[in-house]
Image (tube, rainbow, N blue to C red; front, top):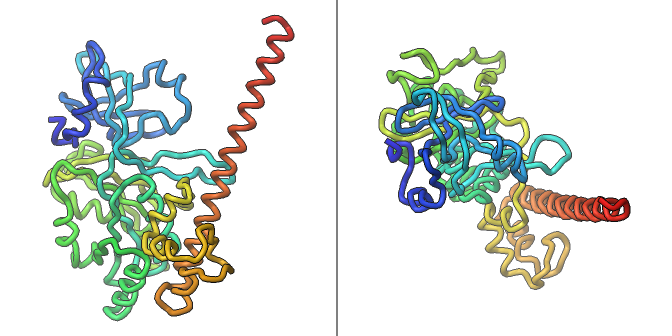
Length: 359
């Protein structure tokens, strides 16, 4: 049972360390405003955090998220559970929280492949695609680009968009239409039993409609049997509107597991500079040929990256997006270091006051 939900040998190798007397293992399938639902040997049940886990973590990012494997204690005849431990994560999807801070928000864990979904019309954005690629590279997740709503553009326009994607990333790209069904079989062939996938993208790009097409005909634990995920009519521009409000993991008829996520208005990266370079592997390879090891790739002589842009071998938009994300990553890292210094200084102040007052 657990194997069908992705409990493969990698997690089994951690089982002895994560085991607790009177407890079993389960996977987190839904997180909604602090409420959890888990999938164990006996099916899906609600769960709450043990006090030690809820109040003694270093960061909210250490709390369970969708896709996590957890150690749980079942009670009430197996109809509810308490989460005690979170397994080590093989891969992560995380982003910087919206706003000016540097806090990390977990999106999902233990994802094998993420489908970056962009609409062929108004949502197509190579810059945002680059941010998703950095997020996936930072978390160790394989990317696949999915272009939806191909029925709204001409074949020539689709070819142009696919060429843009190819210039940004060597990752596979799938073009499809949930209206006509074109390309859906290609996507289904990507889905393997026991592996976990995730749909990422802005609101209205067709993620929920796509998931409905993949789950058509199967009963759902999250909705009344036979009912589909809720979608809304397209807007006047031809784009969809936001419907998904929580992250949830579901198993498809073929045995693949898919996480649907709410649309993201901001894709703030938490990756370090090396993580950004991993998301732009072709540019990082060029950078290794620069004259100076500390080249910033802006105005220095002998910069192999700028030379590739000037020769037309590297798209200027991709180059500028890479520079922007590297600077953002460097700023976030400095902010984290500054915050750690302030925390350390505050800790010393507290100890000094306690010592002075004889505590």
